[in-house]
Image 1: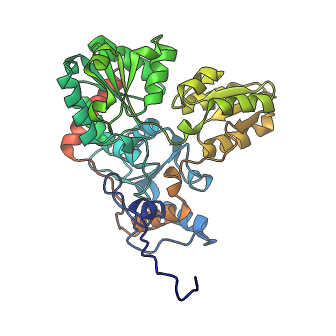
Image 2 (image 1 turned 60 degrees about the horizontal axis):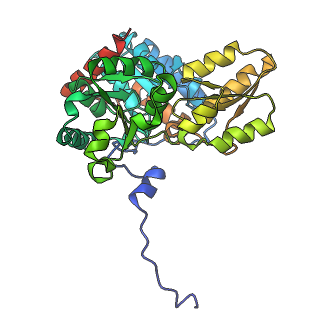
Image 3 (image 1 turned 45 degrees about the vertical axis):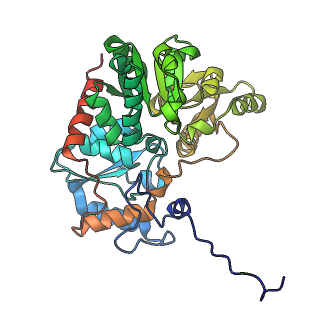
Length: 394
């Protein structure tokens, strides 16, 4: 076929393609990605100086939070670093800061808005910085799930426990239905509390953390757990399965931690004799079962701090953090590698880069409030109730 005969293909980019390219919003999750102004070029050699100058101009009016999985170029400007809940609490402890710039993802900024005062304004440098796991459980889907549990005659026995990595809507649902929030550090305590309140737990939205905590830490069996799939009628479960189950796990997962496999563990043990395998509890059950150590991000950091010189570690968590830890502990003779051979960053977390941070800080320094994250009052009230139950755990 000649060029003249080649038909013109009417190909339009899909909404997902546009979202990944940063040119569109997903109406079911995040609220847009466009900056109402010119985003600095990533090749601008003055970006670091510009960020430093804007932050200095703002002074105590701004407090910058940096999640462990952020890029190094962003982390260097963070006033504090940590996991999502720690950062939200740090923000609440700084009432003099008018602006809380959260270098993390959407649900983290929502949690900060819930916990901070009404006078403080929480800002997310890029509104496309979402969380695929959090987006796997929508308010409509969870409400439908509760209807299924009600029809099966088990809803009154069920206590919802939602992972911190969930939207404000899901946290509010949890609070409204007598449940609590948990982190990867206190998931066992949260589940123990929940089973004191009821006979069953609906665990949202990460199936792996729920399964690993129930089976590995609390001695339940895999048969005690069922998987609710929101994309199937009745979650793909029968009323009998729901009645028999202790743990009703939501079909959600972390796109980063879910990629680690048993092959990854076996391969690294062959390549590096004597290696210690340390993974996050968001990993699959078979990976957690094969690992030497399992724990939250803070646990991982503390374990490496306490590790003897010359020890070898393969870490199953986000690559930005693993690389930062490898550089930090290399002078102590600790060998730290990424568990998987394939490079894997948290793609949405990585949307917050230096140009977005510079644009945010300069806008605030000029008196322009951008990308504010606000949770409505009713949602905030029920979400805070669930968070307060978590804070009251022994």
